[in-house]
Structures are given as structure tokens and as C-alpha cells.
Length: 280
Length: 265
Image 1 (cartoon, rainbow over the protein chains, first blue to last red):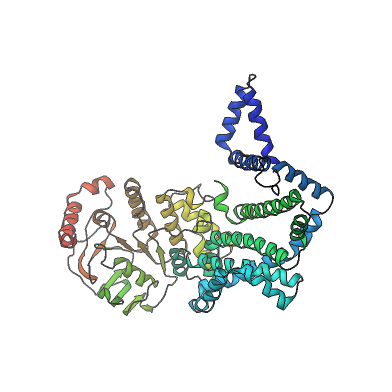
Image 2: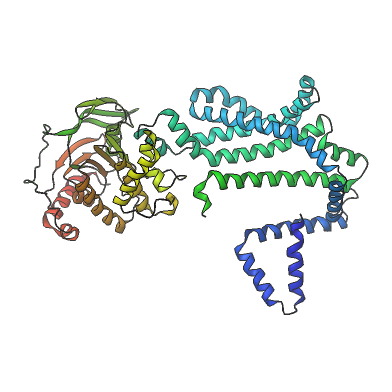
């Protein structure tokens, strides 16, 4: 979020116009070349709109951007934010890890075998279509309010997305590459591990990213609907005491963490698994 | 090459046939793709399957490769009946079929990698054939960094690397632009001469067929049948530009065109 400050400051200096044409040029040059500049501008516009909306104010319960930012810093410093994340991350990481391993595994098997597809696809299509928020309270009846229930909520959200994407990834593998492997007498195992899985990797990762995003939804649903713990507790508590800046800070922080996690995953994929993309 | 007088009739009792096609039929549901194909392919020769689209030439090549099962009939390689892919055949794909995540070196060595050959040895062989097809210096590049023609050279180097007796090429130059295609055809002829292998080549280009082939099998469509076999007696020791203006070459092109024009829409 602090990224927003720098371009605003630079353009303000440029606007002052004290022999600043070189700075403007340098900035224009930077803007042409760097994607990060536009990301920063995009965030700056969002946060400015937020600040204005908060100052109007559109609602007494809607804090400005800077109020929210200071509340976030306060929570980070007084030691409420970190322990909350520690609590939230437990079901999240556990659920996402289980969903990733199980989901990619099931998806690949479904992609490779028609029988597995016919057996399993309907289940996951129904699960993906189902409004999971309505099912989360049911989990409490069976598994109570502990870690198991919350992990299960994450899996319920993340697993169907990962399974269906992995399945599609395998089904869309280039048939010509499979023929190539066969023509050189590759075994079925070589075909799966040397051709099918590598060729499916981009779509597998797209599914994984969607699954992790769904996992974040799942953990927040669990923490808001089952019992307030972690970040869910921060949100619920600050709402109940009308501490809106802190409530928004908790909400914004989980959005930021989710976004950064997905960006990190994309980086890992491009950096380590797709050597052909590295030189672009 | 000292070619005999042009032979215009199908003589099935080829003395040294490495690939024998016997009564091959292929049906896709109600559609009859190939009917009663009988062909022999002579060892060390380049034979082209030529015909309009829909004549089943690629299907026939894939049946010989063992990638597509025939509805009935037999394929014999070196006298043995085969039902699937085997080490004595290597396939070059129309769309190259290169692994985008692997370097040129790994792509070329892939056939050997599947056989479990140690890395050092397979890389040595792959480097040799990368050099043979004129791609030295591109070993560590990825397919997307190469032009269409260069990608197909990778495909051909991969097929050479496994040291198969028969190379099956499915319209290998169709995705290569015209200038590069001519250069490529010349390079292919040089490799044919050097490697002493049997080539089965599918194309829809008459000029290409006449230019590269020892023998041309014309297929007619719906259903695919052998309509004519032509042996263009062209002196390949001449320069490529001379060959392309040679009267014999042009006559064969014209003759094939006359045979095929009835199928042109």
C-alpha cells in the first residue's frame, strides 16, 4: 500500500515545474518500460478514490484510506495482527495443501481415464456449483468448531476448483505431443510424467491459483460463520465495537495477503517450472 | 544417382521391400478413408505419398507408424508384422510436436531419453544431428525462439537421433514458408544421400514430391486408393536450380497434375 505514495510525490514535484523536465522525461521513460509503474498508478487511483469516499463521507461506518492505514499499522505494532494471522493460516495452509495434492491428483486421474471422469466429474461439478457458504454451518454439526471444521471449509471451497481445472488441463494436452511420445515407444508412465504433466502445468497452476483464492474465501467464511478466530475475530470484534477503521484494516490486510500469495505463486511457476518463459 | 528408365507401372514384387503394406483398409464410422492399399517401399529410397486432401495419405502414414490402428490389413517392417510404434520407425510431425518446455538439445535427445540412454551419450548423439540439420549454436534455445523451418529441423534431428531404418515424414514442410522450404528440400536430399535410410514422405505439393522423390504414389480420394505410381527419373547430381528447370522434371509435374486435376474442386 505504501507503493501508492511514491508516484504521487514524484508527479507533484514534476508539476511544480522548477527545471523538472528531465524528471518528467525520466518518469515518462520509466512508464513506457515498466509494468510496475502502471500497477502503482492503478493502486494510487483506487486509494485516492477510497480516501475521497471516506471524507465525503458515504457512510459514518466507512473510514478513509489513511485512517485505515494507520489502524493497520497500529494493529501490526500492538501485536494483534500477527497472532491473528497465525491462527488464520493454520486451517488455510492445511486446507490448501490437502486440496492441492488431492485436487491435482484426482484431476489428473480424471483427465487420463474416462471411467474416473464419469465417476467423479458430476460430484465436483455439483460441489463447484453449490453455494458453499450455506454448507459451512453444516460442517459444525459434524466436526464441531475446531481446526478440523475450518480446514474442511477451506477444502470444500478449494478442492472442486482445483480438481476441475486439473482435469481440463490434462484433457487439453497437445495430442500431437502424446503421439510423438508413443511414436518413440514411450511407456504410459513416461507419457504421463514427461509429456502430459509438463504440458498441463500452466493450466494446473491456473487452477491452483483459483483454488487458493477460493481457500481464502473458505477460511474467512469459516472464521465468520463457525467461530470468530484469527482475522475473522478481528473483523467481528472491531465491527461489534464500531471500530470501523480497524475492521477495514483487517479486511484490507487479508485481501492484500491473498493477492500477494497468488502473485508469489505465479512468480514461482514462471521462475522454476517454465524455463521457456524465463527469457521473455 | 543413376536411375533407370522411368517405370510407370506398379510392380508389387519389389526385391528389397523394407515396408510392406497389405490390404490396408481404414474406416472412421461410416466414412471409408482407405480401401485395399497394397504397397511396397524399397529400402534406401524416398517414396512420396501424394494426393489431394481427403485421400488418406496422412492416415496411411500414421497406420504405417503404428499410431493409428488399421481396420483391416497388415503392415510388415523387415518382414515382421507390426501393430504399434517400433524402434525401426521414426516419425516427423506436421506440427513439429516439440516440447515447448525443453531446449532444442533435450527435444532432439528425447527419443533416446525415453529409451533410457544415459544423458552424456544421448546429448553427444543429439549434438551430432543438430549439427547435421544445420542448427549448431541453437542447442540451448527453446522452440518458441526458433522459426517454423528451424523447429522442423529439430523434429528431423530427433527422428534421425534414434537411428531408425525408416523415417516417416508427415507434410514436414507445410508450416514452413516457401523460401525456407526450398532450402529445406535441398538439405533433406543431402541428408537422404548421407544417412542411407528409407524415407516415406507425405505431401500435397506436386513440385515438392517430384523434386525429392525416387518414387511417387498417387492416391485418389473418397475412399483413398492407389491410383498411380510414378518414378521420376531425375538426375539429382545436378544443381537444384537446374533440376527445377529440367524438362523431365517439368514433364513429371505436368503428368501428375493431369492425373490429379479431376479431384480439384
